[in-house]
Image (tube, rainbow, N blue to C red; front, top):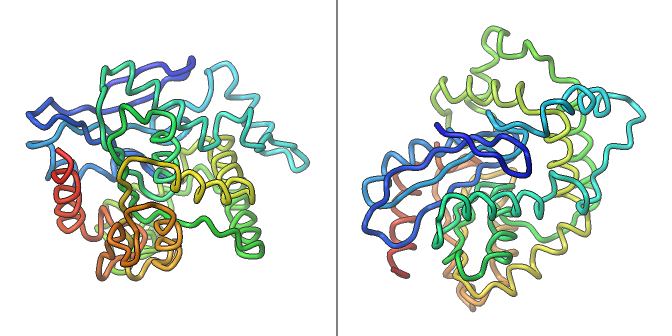
Length: 302
């Protein structure tokens, strides 16, 4: 584990040793998760590819804002009538802001050529980063990520539930007995290891409230959702999508919708790979299959 400051904020990352492959693999986690969920994949890939994983601003072990502002931010987010900024422009938790963080991280680590692999929200961040860094980003692999259709009622409900979860989750949640067992089955097609259930509870509990709320609200506005197809259609790099066939959070039909805006989709959707018996955590549920697909994709463009 190493740390680096991005815009004055401490970020935690892990970088494996260089290999003969010319492009690094950069892993971007999703909402209320952390870099650790990529570790099983990285263990399978690191012998052949240099791998970078990191915690997004405000998640895992990365700070949300400068230390002196943390207490003020906590109070501001938890106020019932708080007008927390989530316009996606000045917020440090919009997809574009997270893409700028990643751009800075790659530059500081002297990674000049990379494939970005993003899970869920991380997929959106990867797409934005590919747009910002067309020379450095060789391609994008979105895992359990898609969308580009704004369904008003569904998104309003999702935002409301997410907001309540962030505002009222108890800090002592990881201490509750058996709660980790519930998280081994939440949003997956088959139960994951109990250690991952515990990790999900921990990451839920420690995510900074302003970051958790800002990332949720900024990434799910009508404007933001409608931008995604435009971004995908403009990217010159290859973009692939790995969809879980039983994913209830990002159903395969919504993955295919976003993928259809990229030239690789063509008539047969060859840039969409459906993973069988898989929910919303493909990197844990079907690790070997996801690793094989990543290998097959990136080696095409060596």
